[in-house]
Length: 55
Image (cartoon, rainbow, N blue to C red; front, side, top):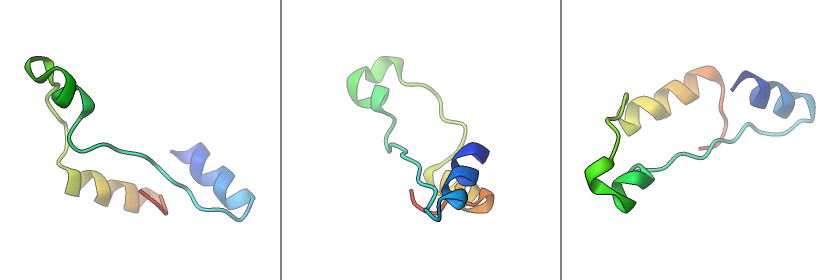
């Protein structure tokens, strides 16, 4: 994340991140879906806290 944010700042751009809800494996292989570490709301808050501009 730090590299994305630094590069975005250096060129006057915005740091952008892709995330998926639900996890792609949950759609493709429901029986093998991983346990998630955070909720979507928590993930968005964390990304905002580190300086990501677009999600």
